[in-house]
Length: 274
Image (tube, rainbow, N blue to C red; front, side, top):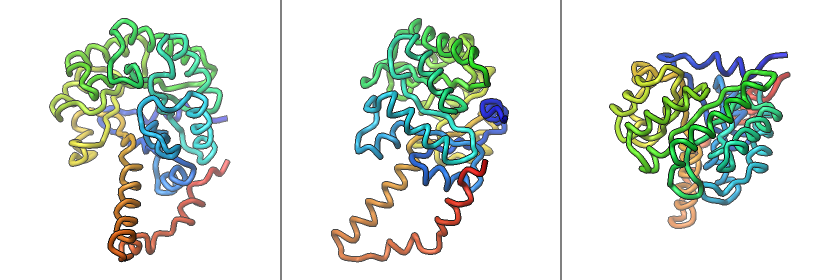
């Protein structure tokens, strides 16, 4: 039987980043798989949108697990779960989240250092203990499991780039397999973060970073690129623009943008074969 965690880990090559495509339902998962994605991930924000909720601590662990289990069953690709802050403040909760994630077939999860639903970061020592407990649980599993530790305080402006680097280095030492500081203030700060770490680094392609190419990120030394909720937001933007035209202007030509896309074929191509 294939060790999906080991397959996922092998994709992480600094300087040769792969796209970890964030999806939000079975259809989007199969579509991305059918288009050639090597791995997919859930997105807490995109998942929340499907539930009619805003992002930021509005999902429960049971909801996230059930959603991720649907995505795992949809394709043959490795799947990472976006599990926010591990769904609890204490280290033991983070460890239990890892164990439950592995039980449903996830290849890995990411855990951030934000006290949801606020934008505040956990105290440095507690943040490290949470990752240490999660990493210990991951190493005790029968199969490989990729734990990504996130320094999200740089995105919420709870701390600066130097603090993010210090946290990520501590997370690395605590046993995290991949490091992630989403939405640094500049490309230069992102490159500085990547250079300060020895384990694979994920970079979020959103906002100010969408003008960079895969080659640009490779030059930085990134190992993985994710898009978070950006692809889901593009989809919602298309719904908004097209519906607004129909509802407000009485025109319908934006509907033609979907013409010629064989969604059925992509869904069949991306579906689980084994």
